[in-house]
Length: 577
Image (cartoon, rainbow, N blue to C red; front, side, top):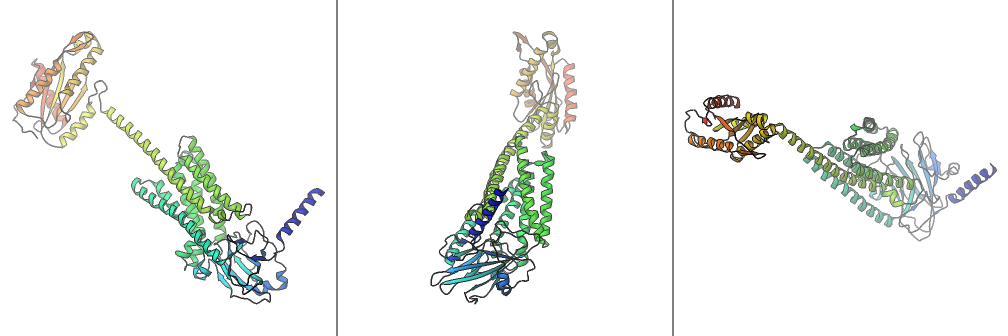
């Protein structure tokens, strides 16, 4: 126990020495900016009531209360005003510097100083923040800053009062002004690349929404829009270019836009993964989406602390639920879920990098400034690929279903023995043909001497004869004609735009002669005859039922007369349609 206490005491002593009591920060050429919080050169004081003025803070009694800021992000039960004191040492004859915040989500920001050794303020105070128009920000900077131009060598003190209901990290950094402006241009360029990727994905998928009419693409577009607006808001660009004169919305956009991003993200996940197959996970995602919508309302009503907390919780729960749902549907064989998991992993890694950088666990200023948008852009790109694979999968499934449906539809209208159209197929085809108008002829053919073949040689022989008759009828008719087997030894030929008079008689005779040719089965010569009844449309009726009735009567007459010929009524010659 004594050893443990000694180690703890040593750790506290080392930490105190490392902080160095807020030693002056030397103003020098810091190309990436000098983070004051990580070097122990930032002093902090919390004002719970928000009543302290700059004169109060500079008073000796209050000044003695300044101490090292906490390493973790500042988060309390109630919002507070945080004062920071920075002591800067300039060794050159002149200088031009900026003291800048790390975040853009501060509602009220005030800079005082620099004060020289005699306590004289060398510049007027700066009052800016989300609750102020964008024009109040010096140098038109998205981040909040004050410009420092000390007149000569010496030690100078700057105070900053920062307020935010959501209590992010309050780190400050000092830059050479020229270096800061150059860094800002580089960051804008990088931000523009990320925005360009998201806008390109947005336009591309808006086009696909119009093509596929798929709600998944609609939800993806919504997610992409609010991801883009959220990133632009966190970077300060929406306040700069969209609503700089609307402080009311500047404050609320930090909470409403992420909530809507989470809302559409939940809808996209449900639709893309089709989580209805897993009711429990689907219910969780529905709840996350509804809570995200409620959070957007709370943000709009100005409940910033509650909205921020709920956004953080919903984002964490959403990633966990979406990842679990993706794993479950992947196990069921939905391969595009792999891409979804990859996208979530990319976002998780980059967000983890931002968090670790913010907590000073790792020193990665680039990740801190750009990690979130890198992760979001990468996630949305992979989601776009996932959508493509999903569409390919759905198209393949739809093609298979269509082929299956076509196969079933064809089987429902096809005679399995001969491959001809069956009674259902005849009804559909003849109805369509008769509705087109014109002159048509229906031939009803009934085989003669078929039953003895079945009785003598068996059903295999009879089936062979039926298949041969079907083949001969198809061979001697046109592609637009309908050849059907009604069942047993009855066949129907529907002649589209049929010839009339002698031409039709010759065609019928030709078909009958073809049918009467011998069929060879197991070295046996099998022969059948045929009796044919012919009906004309529209003379004998405009419908298939009427034509069948008429043709059946004439076929019966042919059988009664023991003739293997067609019996035709006295019909006038009709022109070909």
